[in-house]
Image 1 (cartoon, helix red, strand yellow):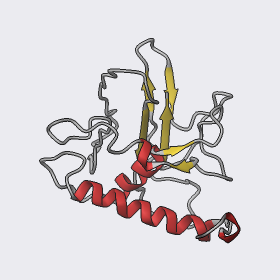
Image 2 (cartoon, rainbow, N blue to C red):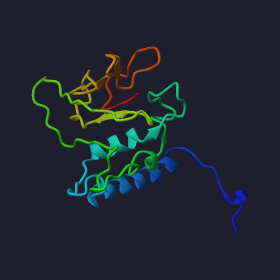
Image 3 (cartoon, rainbow, N blue to C red):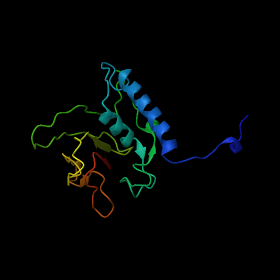
Length: 178
């Protein structure tokens, strides 16, 4: 038998990388094996994989739901967000995704989501790939999409919004937790 003395605690990117790679493999299998929607096998894009991983990360501090340079979006917790409510038809009722959505012009993309209970956080994550700019460019991004969630009480939540109501600019990954 193993005891706690046999466990080594390690951190850093060399330890985070294999965990995220394994989680990305599990999420890919989730979509390919029709666990998201029983009628559809999906080959997820890298942006969708990033979005699901970010969406399922729990903030290390409930009062700081925005990402930071030390811990990113938090601690990965796939089991809390995937396959937690599978309907009789085999669909994961707590997950809704869009992948490879084409944005034309400067028109906003909008959708309405009905929340049936408040037993868990409502989480929305936007991830996209941006074109590589010339190294001499003064711009950080070619395109800068912003995630905005409006609650039923008209409260506005912005992607990566900090407690002082400022938001992270120039990120291709934005998350809102309500």
